[in-house]
Length: 202
Image (cartoon, rainbow, N blue to C red; front, side, top):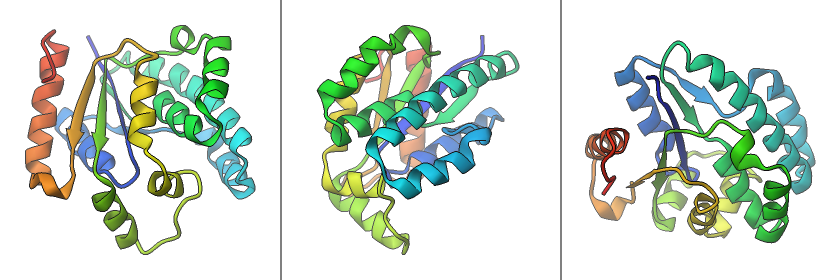
């Protein structure tokens, strides 16, 4: 049976690197969080820098992506770089948890959206993340990098995960852990295999 695995995590934590390695080994592709048809609209939403517009845009996109993934699962595993969990986590910071939870409950999101078999949550400490963001030599994204640098997004994610009943594989790529990309990847892969075979991810 084909599996749906969602990679979530803070900006600059190494999520995309690990998901790409996993997809290569599985001979799969990493699906983008935003459906192709909505990419131009996202640029417009970003230009307004409206928290409310961003929430509505990403929620709608998540439902569209859910439908897209349902079809893709028929032919193979699906690996997704961010999904509904990042939308909710970042918005609990931007619009406050109570507001987002009311919308979550009103839309009955946990039952109306296709949920992954496992979530890989990639994290890193603030020092590591800030160093990686600075190394990009680009402008900080108002919706992503700026929120990550000024808030505890990890705490927001963990609150959101409690709204669902999905196994979590957690990987810490902080430089203080002294783990190479290859070591983190092997640890992640072992934990995913364990969860999918019905074991514990610890």
